[in-house]
Image 1 (cartoon, rainbow, N blue to C red):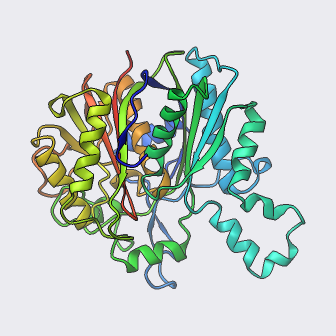
Image 2 (spheres, helix red, strand yellow):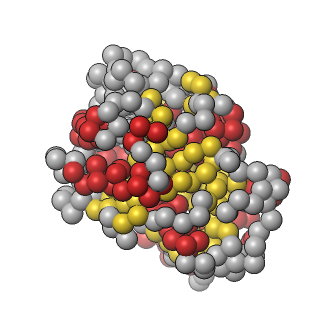
Length: 390
């Protein structure tokens, strides 16, 4: 569906579950981002030199060992919390609940164990946990979801794409409700080190010092981990927010670098606005991809000027939760949706001279519309337009 709109009846976010570097649970996540302090901690072995430490926002221990590996535990916990949250808010699942699982690398630590010397000791069926279909199967069995099931992988744009996939299912009348879960617990020392070597990740200083989107002196992002679940419906229950529309496209340019004219990113934003049936002047908040890298900063500043006339208030969640790769957009959508209900945007504090529209710490949310941009490596662009619950 590259470059197309996705108009259907409005879809709402009715339940939210979160496992992040702050800990296990939606309220733990909210308290963390509202604190203005990064989830990143100094971790042994996470420096550019394997013998040194570095900063990363890793999911701490805390899952149920009965639910398999740490990765499987996080996926099931995020869905379970979102499901229970939606039920508590008056949602009743229909007979066809679909599941969209957004992921890129999957259970990296389990793969490492399986392919290493200890792999010979794995039981005959342990390898099944490595298959991308297994976490989704476990979720469907746990909650009785009998609608369609699909995995999506669009790099750091995966969570937005999962939301747009759900919209397509609603439009095709394949589902009554959809559960989306985006997961990435891939931040091993080896992976973090490679991002640091690329000049994208910052490991030698605390996140708020190295990751400064739209501010002077930003050097990149602090790597994070997360699994975030959403229950999506068409009006059932007491929703947090409304998904007004969205769009996605491909730059067809490079594996890592952003196409320098930014034309495809700008086209994606314009298509998202058209799909949502709103004008650029109606967007009050720009929830940025905001990695803090120079090329991302250039692209988003250009987009803000050319499409939005530098009008919306701007913020990025990555200095707080870290860059959670395929789950990054889900972390940021969750913060925006929770913010609508609670009347506040959990923006990080500004620490250096900044874009004039950058929010500085928690700020009043108001009822305005939010444009959530995600940019995935390989040129996967996506934008979702959110509004308050009707």
